[in-house]
Amino acid sequence: MHKKITSFVLILWTLFQLNSQNLNIEDQLKNLPGVTFEKVTSSTTTYELKIKQPIDHSDPKKGFFHQKVYLSHTDFTHPTVIVTQGYQLRKNREQEVTKLLNANQINVEHRFFGDSKPDSLNYKYLNLKQATADLHHIRTLFDKIYTKKWISTGISKGGSTTIFYKYFYPNDVDASISYVAPLTNSLEDKRIYDFLNSVGTKECREKIKNYQTRLLKNKAQIIPILESYASQANWKFTYLSVEEAFEYSVLEYPFAFWQWGHSCDDIPSGKDTFKKDVIHYFTMDPISLFNDKSIKKYGSHYYQAATEMGYYGYEIKDFKDLLVSIPTDQNPHATFVPNKMKVDFDGTLLKKLHHWIENDGNNFIFIYGENDTWTSCAVPENDKIDAEWFVMKGKHHGNARIKNMSKNEYQRLCSALERWLELKIEK
Image 1 (tube, helix red, strand yellow):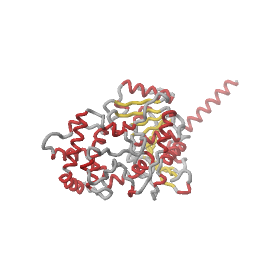
Image 2 (tube, helix red, strand yellow; image 1 turned 135 degrees about the vertical axis):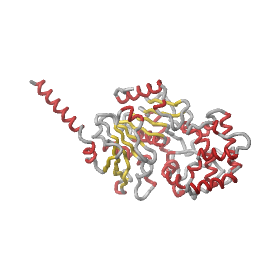
Image 3 (spheres, rainbow, N blue to C red; image 1 turned 60 degrees about the vertical axis):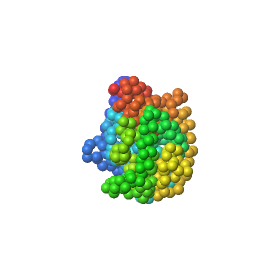
Image 4 (cartoon, rainbow, N blue to C red; image 1 turned 120 degrees about the horizontal axis):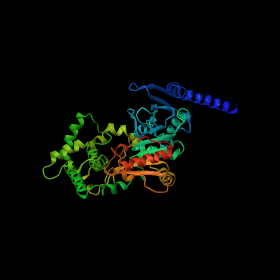
């Protein structure tokens, strides 16, 4: 009799659990405080959410903003992936690990980007402590809805956000996958110069330098072409002058060249190359990064880089005599903070993070491309933590992805996830 009662109670409990888990996702969302949502028309299980966040998580009296989040619901009994964006989130996209695990996905736009801005931008509250507190608040909100394993993932600056998120909230997720994510060590991370002076072949690096030199020597002829191009594209240059933007763009060329996996065969060479040089310059489009629209769009990013995340500069010893519009007393920096405000860099958090990840950065998967410039700032490999590194041969910032892994790499990644998440992946 006792066994029958116990079995009956277990059945009732199971039915109760199934009933609560099978509540309509929209009913669940309606019960979340400070959350509004609407269905994305292209899918019946994807929703755009607006989540109320404090501007200052330590003092809600300072006001709130609404953060844009996309929820892709699959099943209450499946794992959940939280995507940590580094910038604005224009549209939702299902990430690789979401597909791999058949998981739910919560895709989070970064604070102070895109639609996730307060009415008045006080950059004092744009820091990694506040940004990761946003993620923790979302994780807490959905804790009762999605009770299985949680995974965080992000790409590039979003991958760096994944790292910082686990540093501030190590118990929020069971595993983290960080793609092509720089973890710099200073405001001007000089490891990038070492990379650019050693990547590829000597012949290719020399070809790049010669091309940059020709562009700078022919600046007087190129600037009018650039001004005409900018006029047609409706670009404005007030933060930087056209001349300053051009010089920065020439210095940016090798960084972008390797970051995005271009071919040395495409770089013009030989005599009488002016026309080819100009065509190649506009094909590569390095100048678009330095017009007012782009600088404003990434203003919050530049602020973060200049205050606590670190970034890179441009090594100019080979071009110093050819630069006339930008500072040459030191390596010019690549950060363009909003309104040219004066800010100070504080490397305290970076130092703490490097020490933490070296000793406690467990359950991480780091994916980098061998030829990606940002790999120079990769999280260093070490055997003191339970983590996996993949430096994918021949790959760059745009294609160092799980789908492009070798069979052995893919199996190693799946084995790590199966161990950390205590589940079996259907390969």
